[in-house]
Length: 359
Image (cartoon, rainbow, N blue to C red):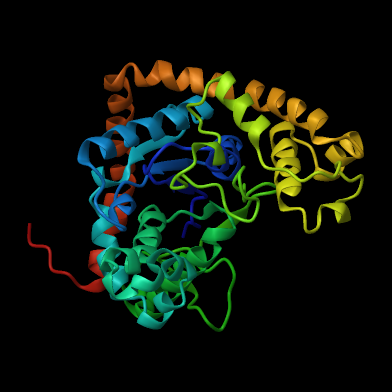
């Protein structure tokens, strides 16, 4: 009996321009993974409608733009699968099954729903409340074993593991009867000896996974911030990148020489973290080089490395987006390859649950 095939799954919503936070916290960290194991990178357009329907033309354009960002950042569509979620119907079908596996209490504990719904919780869509179940379906439709996550998604991956564990337990006898189980790689009293769904492992990213706003170091860099100066978009050219770094909020003190000196200095901590991530250095090494220097010295150095890393991505994105037919070809090919993996999984899931198929 085979073990679970190692496989990576991750995705980004097509809601506005991708920015530096998306790149450092997610996309740039996917690139080396595609050389380590089979990888699937999705543009999660079903998730993009949970908080309200965007303009249809804007959603289509944003889906192509995110795809272009993936490719320009180094995701190779010949190595990895790149597609948009809505093209593979198994995501929505499995999400419904998981709606019936997950418990209301589990979803009520999800902090992102509380943050996004705010005080108007009763007027939030069912999709926003239940979207962690769709996220679990995104991952488990491919029986993915590894998911790169930032701090804000750890709770949702824990829910994915809870859903997989409950499904494996609830249908343990049926899975054995059908002979489609995989030996439990980590035997425990909480799980049967054979599983159908893996307990997906997080791939924890290193420093600068949570990039903060350039205008407020206590808030996460966001596509929805009304100030474009709060973020560096992956479509920004060299001049725009330099301008935004120059105008980034700081305090009057020079950079410290030690990490303790960044406490209670969120803007300084954020800029040092961004430099470290772009340069492939530890934050300690950045402080060793620039400690004692004013921001008038550090900011030009940060702008230079940001332009060096990001301007080529923006240029390649512009080239790709000038040929939408080629982007659509990549998405079509990716959807076909993704479907070839997800369809047998859902066929088995239907058999496990007991859905009658007489076609």
